Amino acid sequence: MTINPALILILGAIPIPLLRGPFRASYLLILPLIGLGFAFSLEPGLHWSVNIMNYDLELLRIDRLSQVFSYIFFFAAFLGNLYTLKDDDPVQQIATQVYAGSAIGAVYAGDLITLFVFWELTAVSSVFLIWARRTERSYQAGMRFLIIQVGSGVLLLGGLILLVRDTGSIAFDFLGVTSPGTALIFVAFGIKCAFPLLHNWLQDAYPEATVGGTVILSVFTTKLAVYALARGYAGTEMLIWIGATMTAFPIFYAVIENDLRRVLSYSLNNQLGFMVVGIGIGTEMSVNGTVAHAFTHILYKALLFMSMGAVLLRTGTIKGSELGGLYKTMPLTAAFCLVGAASISAFPLFSGFISKSLILTAAADEGRWLTWGVLLFASAGVFHHSGIKIPFFAFFAHDSGRRVKEAPWNMLLAMSIAATLCVGIGVWPQPLYNILPFPLDFNPYTTPHVINQLQLLFFSGLAFTWLMRTGYYPPEMPSVNLDCDVVYRKLLPRLARQFFAKFEALDQLTRRLALECIQRLITGIFRRTGPQGVLTRTVTVGAMVLWVIVLLGVYLVLYLI
Image 1: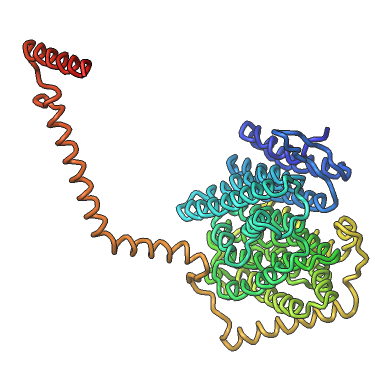
Image 2: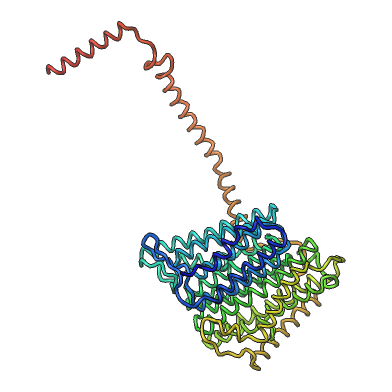
């Protein structure tokens, strides 16, 4: 029997508080690498199953889909540990290992019960990365995040129960939206994947996490949902339209947002849309594109969050209106940010290009030209808000006058590794293509692909320049942008207060009448059972004898009759 490699991280978190200084640092770097090496050694197949209460739980199922996600999850855990190496916060470090291990355990799960256990463990462990910032805003955001994530798990459990009742099966394979149970599971996955109208937990919670916590959060939760959708709902038509919507609407919010980590959160939502579209198309090419894009996205999105985290650490702010000119004192961070920006914008020779091309090609091959057009529009929008806005306003816009130190060496090393991979995968994509779920013979560097993408980027950049020069581009200013979360954070509580205010008089009258009834009842009971009550006052012996004679007489009469 082979154990689930996820346990290396989950159980490996136990001794972290006992270690100090370089011993803890070395341990945190070695732990995910041990797990990654173990994952590479596993052969496809079912390696660990147990029977509990007549249910066969598949705790370690290995196939090409689970393997590629486990590889990048382990490596991302290593990068996260390296990036946060100087944070002497055992709570955050333990949460990181358990969170990453739970996501990996869910990837290896071959049944829905095991998936549910790890699904909920990711929710509970990840919230500590938000609370670790130890501010009132982070506490409130963490509570909302936890409620939504646990709610996703409750829906998953409800769907599992209905599915078992209907089919008797707990297998985690293709499900499809074919019954109430599978529909509930679909919604549970959709919440974690930040579907439209279910997405605000992402922009609410991620920017409130710690500097390193946001980097780690950007990796696991949503990509686990992408994996679950690819496993259970590939080819589901509605995912195409859901994903297309996800790619488009965050662009407008990202353009007007002042908080640069919140800009990246909207951008994350946008990139998830490409993956969801690929799952919805459901062909081998599109699923490969989804998995490849998830792989590359983890690297370049982590790189962008790392660079913004370094800015936040050194300046104490991440507002675009308060930054600018940082390239003078943080040149390496600025360079790494530009690599991440080029990757997310899908510049040729960067990782985003070789993965996004697969999804666009799959959409075109299936004749889905409207979807293809929406994805093309979204690609131009990504270049605006992540490819240009993030590095421009953080490092190159008006000089804010801030002269701060470069990022710490461990952060620079983590960013350099991620940047190297972003370029390396973009230049030589074949090793990534070789580990995708289906055999792939695809060359992204054809003349039409390269020229079309360069034209798109050129005109998108030209549009940004024109908008900036003419003053039409939304300026960076302190503001609060209203999104769908205003419904449950503001509107519903206000309606509830108004409802109860209107019926306050009725409520008071009801309370008064209820208290009067209770008082009368207590008075009546006391009158009968109090010191002078009929049932408790002292009775003479003669009176008692008289009553006994009377009762005997009545009994005699009844007996004779």
